[in-house]
Image (tube, rainbow, N blue to C red; front, top):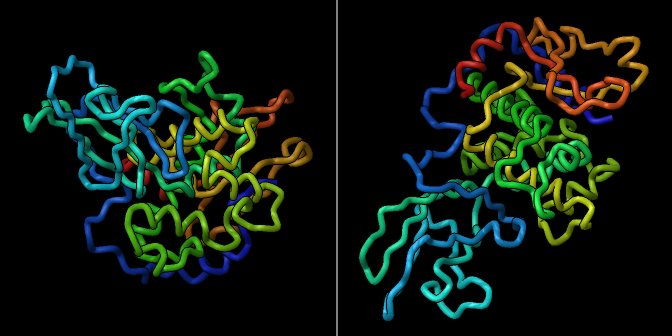
Length: 324
């Protein structure tokens, strides 16, 4: 049963109810700085994307002797000639290969003359892509919009968005309390390279998300999703959807459909019929709690949702104001 409600978390939450937790004083964001009015946007991954999805092709005609140069700020992308072309000019653009996760603004010039267009490239944390595959690959595969054998660029997955929002909400709660141990995250890892390290540390925290545990049946797909080439063809559509969904969570194009949930679980048929027990004792520092059913999340034939979500009534309003 998928769950991000591991018992070890409860021990960390005990004792945090006395109001003594420090509040973060810096203004660091959990998401990267956005490009202002980009000409176009791309969602890439260090683990690779579907063929052609990483190609920047300019809509213009090049003259003899023109030299096309494209650069990324920050420099987290490499530019290669497109397959079958011996230069960027001949190919009308470049293939973009991420070297790091983050968000970059791409600009180009022709023979030293800068072009007006600015392109935004979001490279979400690979761990975020992996955990979406580990937790909900079947749902992502079913929810993805496919045309001509490929996931469309506008495809969305309500289930992936909800799960991604839970992770983002955990980061927000950690930032509010300046306490990575709130969700069992290692402080050093959490602060190593914000905002990417926020996601890495929260996802890889012990006893939180089952697919990261080598003993869990979902671990192989989580591990394979570090690189698209490692995946069986069965899960390529789910991976491509995960890239799009993870990018929208990371750059905050995706709002929070859960209203501030910080945990989820997959109810069994019996639990769905008899009730799933989630009490304030589970997360005392975040009580009072209640269960949220997100209407658009994937459901089984019997109406049982693939995931139900847990949030704090007190924290909901505060978290929602950060979500767009």
